[in-house]
Image (tube, rainbow, N blue to C red; front, top):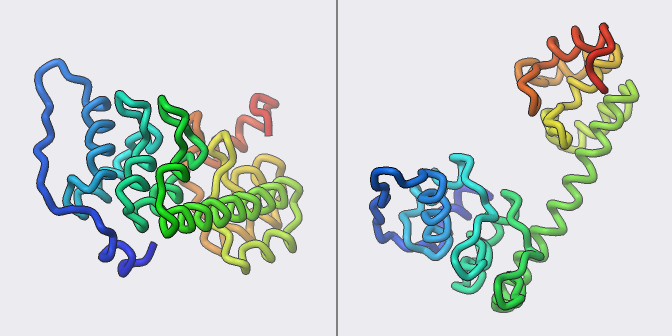
Length: 208
């Protein structure tokens, strides 16, 4: 989303204090806050801060509704699109079997559909970049990057194109990725960066 989209995001400006009490799980509270944010009960800046804090974007309330469902039901078009871009599941159903599209008006439904299609295309492009890096196909890597694919995209194990190329000793591809700004300090889901994965792979201790 652009700054203009964020500014237009129809989220209300009512301030809500975080109701943390002793012994209450902060993750539970954050889940509630995310649902409230999607319902327009938080200031815009708080809303985006909350989404960037690692809260589960598909958390559910007592009715089985996700933030995306609440946002679509309220007709918050830009909020709905942003949630989809963050990984909100547009196919999830609540306790009554209703999906976000079932709850949305026509404008919001169109926005969700467009965002979902764009996300799927992005994932396909990122998959192509990751595969090209793993194969050492530098020309294909360059082509994907020129199309605007995220150079530090990750696979299901949190590994970037640089990690996959480095682990398989594709020095030309590694050099191309580094020259184009790939971050060598990113860590995968196991906490390993590219250099650590290279060391492990040399001893056959890591599956590429």
